[in-house]
Structures are given as structure tokens and as C-alpha cells.
Amino acid sequence: MHRSYVEIVRDGYAYDPAKHSNVAFFPAFPLLARAVAWLTGLSPELALLLVSHVCLAAAFVVLAAYAHRRCGEDHPAAPYVLLAFGLFPTTFFFRMAYSESVFLLGVLLALYGMERRWPLLVVALIIGFTTATRAVGIALLPPLLLHLRRQQGWLGASGRFLALLPLACWGLLAFMAYQYHAFDEPLAFARTQEHWRMRPAVPLLDRLHALATLEPLWSVFDPSSPCYWRRHEPQGNPLFSLHLANSLYFAFAVVLIAIGAWKRWLNRLEVSLAAGLLLIPYVTRSHEMCMAGMGRFAAAVVPIYLALGQFLARLPPPVAAMLLSLSDFLMGVYAALFAAWYRFF
Image (cartoon, rainbow, N blue to C red):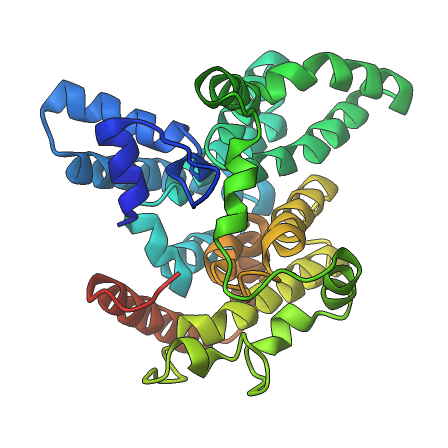
């Protein structure tokens, strides 16, 4: 459970420019939990967990409907999509007091709404909600533009997109307005991120070079790097170290999306969404955080489960079952270590 969400539910937001502040965490998840706590009398901790689990259950329902529509009612990949989603190792975070399950539900509703051709205002409102959950909710904007392009030419689609843009960003814009009113700093959520880092800041050109050469991904394996995993988990087991595995999960997600696009298991909307959900955290946070959290972020990339479901459906059932069992085992180990207060993020 992230204590910052508990602080927000209990006491609201705080911002100190000189140190990390809970304003870094977007409001949709803690506000939902605050409403649940007020209605039920539950503690902030239990309210946060209840919101996470209810949203996760709803996400399973929406994903099932979306997978059956995308794969076909009788296609064997659809059940594997749900199994992959339910057993992917870092989805254990969806069962904790983190915002991922709320975010994932919003993303799935937006995708399903576009697939079913819901009214554009409804889709835009849902996308706006995701931007109130996590900043990477803006990754749904390119799929929205492509969805509009399916209905008309680029000129008309661009005009409608610009008209819908404020509504599709209402959550982010409202949070920025609140920060300006409360702290006289509309970008407080971004500025406070400077206080969350695992290695010192470097000049911009050096940082861009590191990102372009994928240095954050391999630095955790390099004993000479400040990101080397044993510097942060000196007693850790490499088989169960999430700090070590974050790069692997991120790279695995990239490979799955590439294969899904090549095999046409994923459409253009899903590929563009996945690209945004992977690129935004990689560009903005991977270097200074030594890839910390990237396994969790990769787990929220919905299209990977569509691609993984298609892949598993093409394997012999015993092999698919073995891989899913291994994934389930890792998820259980991660959840146990997280509950025991190991460094898991």
C-alpha cells in the first residue's frame, strides 16, 4: 500500500517545493477511496483496497467483452487474454492500494467504447477520467484521433479532435487548476518528481543519449552503474528481484507489441496506445529512477494481453498451462515480498 494515497484520503494534498510531496499522485483513485470511506465508515486503507479490487473486477468484465469482440466469440485466444491478464506477475499491484486498477478500467472502457462506436462525448469523458488517474492517460489521445480518422478524412478528424481535446483532458486540466489554486503551481505534480530519483541528475544531452542507447534498460545489469540492482537490493535473490526484472518486463512488453503489430493481432489504435503507455514513462522517468516501476507500468499496457493471448492460444495447451503457472508463481512471490515490506516498486 502506498502511504501517499492514505495521506491524501485522510488529509488531502500537500506540496513542498523542497522535497517530494504527495501532489505527485493523481486524484481519481484517492478521491474515490475518500468517497467510499465517507459512505461506509471504512478506514482509508480498507477504502483504497476496496476501490482497487472493485475496479479490477470490473476491468475483467470489460476486458472479456473487448477480447471477445476483437478476437471473435469462438476464438480460443479470448480466454487466454483473460488468463494472461489475471496471472501476469506485476499485476499483483492491481490488487494493492495503487491506482493501476482504476486506470486500467478507464483505458478498457475507452477502448471498448471506441470499438462499439459509443458517442464521442462519452468516449472523451472516459479518456478525461483516465487523465485524472495517471498522467499517462494522455496516451489515449492518439487512439482517439485514429478512431475519428476511421469515420472521416484527416482534416475533419483533426477538427473534431481539437474540439474534443479539452473534454478528453478534463481530469488533467482540473488537477492543474487545483494545484494552481492551492499551491500557485499548476505543474506541482511534475516538479515534485525531481525529488524522486535513484541517481543524480545529468545534463540534458547526456540524458537523451542514455535514453537513445537504451542505457536505463541494461544499467541494472552493469556492476559499474549506480543503477546496478545489487546496490539497491544487496541481499536480494536475482530470481525474485523486481528491481532487476523491471527492465525485462518492460522489454517483454515492447516485444509483445512489436509481434502483435507484425502479426496484425493488434489494430492501429491498440499499437498507438501501447506506444504511448510505454514511451511516456520511459522518456520521463526511466533514467533517474533506474527503470524502477517500469514492470508495474508495463502491466497497465492493455494491448500486451491481447498479443499474449494470441501467442498462448497457438501453443500446445500443456506448454501454455506451464507458462501461465510460472507467471502465477512469480506473482504470488512478488505479492508476498511486497507484503513483507521488501523494496518493491
